[in-house]
Image (cartoon, rainbow, N blue to C red; front, side, top):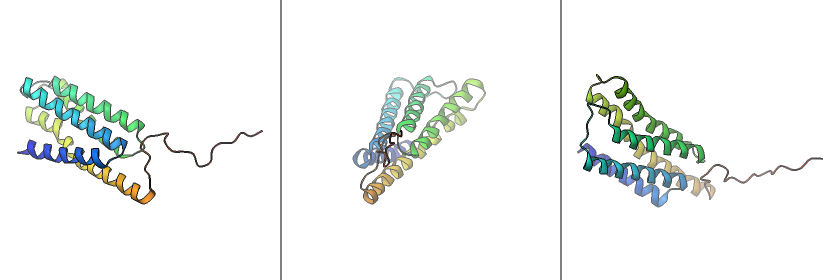
Length: 157
């Protein structure tokens, strides 16, 4: 039931971001959709195992962390930094499992998935804020460097 609730919440967030979001929100929606699809494919091929290092989820989490860190570097938004931090936390779970094989499987599972519950509300809030900035300002720059300088530099003699 938890998994179904999470998937519904995530699909709502992805749909809202794809339909109403700017570039960064859409990019995050695609990252999340890729991670969900990869996770579902992984579970079809390999049953989840939390008693040892979960290499399949490690690969998915590496993709998520690197993608959101890159998004945080190029997006003209603050929220991708939060998303990147949320995607780094599961990597700490994998590192903990690698360093301490006595880690209880339930603790490994909780460490691995708990931060993902914060991603859908973050994406929904980010998309809503984007819509608010558009209605207030008429535009909302998506990427760093997309702002035009109001006072271009002049050559001084």
